[in-house]
Amino acid sequence: MRKIELHYRRPPDRLDIFVQELVVDRPDVKITLHENTPLSEPLYVGRTRIYEPGAPLVWFVFPHAWHDVGRFHLRDGTFTGYYINLITPVTIEDDVWSMFDLCLDIWVNPDGTHQILDRDEFDEAVDRRWIDRGTASRARSELDAVIGELVTGRWPRGEVAEFDLGRVRTLALGG
Image 1 (tube, rainbow, N blue to C red):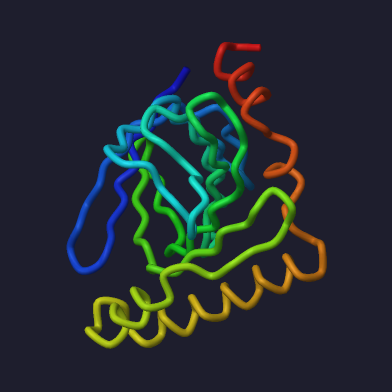
Image 2 (image 1 turned 90 degrees about the vertical axis):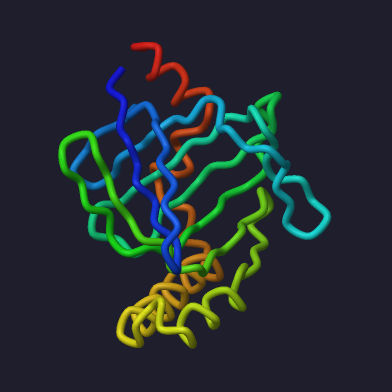
């Protein structure tokens, strides 16, 4: 399986590098598997645990899109929901991918209910000019578009719904 190195930049100047297995490589979608993400603490949305150290994570990257999607699980593989992450479109150079986090996210529960996350971080990044006004405007438009898809039942898109953890693991094993 081919591995990619994802350079994930966050304002103001943070860089995280993640190595993931590229499971699906199509022009319209790239799907990666991070089988054991090195988190030190569980992640919560409100009081709900959505992710924990050692849990698998499936990422959907759509070239040219202003968001990507994480399919979150607990360590035992229990699906907890989708994390829609607003980003600048990914730059792909062979096995090195780069993206910039726009500090604005949407959590989607398995039942389809959703909430906007980190609006305060986004506002701070814009106020401090870590995100320029034009990019901020584009992020707001993307947020509105994705929310529109959620409320009209047009989300999740086919591949996000179709490629669950079991299917992605099977593909990763060459199946």
